[in-house]
Length: 312
Image (cartoon, rainbow, N blue to C red; front, side, top):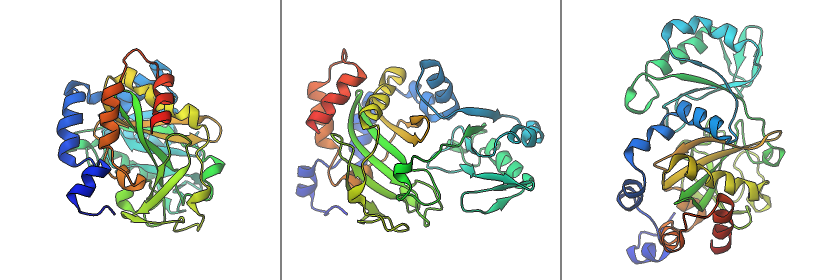
């Protein structure tokens, strides 16, 4: 946890909520572009058209009367993920790991009936999990297959990598690891572990859970000092390319690693949180100012990623 000394926080370049909102989000993210990333279905369709690697979309449910078709829609898929198109913070995401004897099994092995699945989708459509509580669409995606490098670093869930981008340049990265406390979800507020990642090499720097430093995964006991993200030199350009496709200047790109497909973008966030600073043990402010002095709109995602690796 950061010391509450204003001078020390300034020296570390810690970015506060007001600074993020007024100096970066309001200034660099035009509001009319928000729907491109706030609505996961819109982003999915945009990404597919642009050739950005994303998990496969298996189907959608947009009307309550279509819920009766859900059983036949899900039958061909042993594993899948149901999520609200306009959800946030991981709310409403349901992961099914197996179908057996007319039951659906979560990674925790909790069994759900078809009626429970239908109720969950009905709740999504009614807006229970969506931003502003407005009516929503349920998306059904192919389940990501865990990259073996994370076998010892996650519990009942798929880790995801958050990369903060400013003007198309990666400025900070964090790996989020599911735990028993987080119920298999990679959400820091629910007890997932945040691991700061060195932009230059993709190796772990330090880790926190509930804002307190941890050296090992609390469930598996494996030390983070041995953790290095594979495909690192491909991940950063993939994240950086989202700038060209959204025109959002301050952006969080969430990425998963599939053992067969490699890095996949799962969603983008126009208002990424600030806890990534705690996981990395340093502030965003100085890095954002640095990018403002060197940003060159003619550079490619690969060029911008290489520069970030050199200066951060």
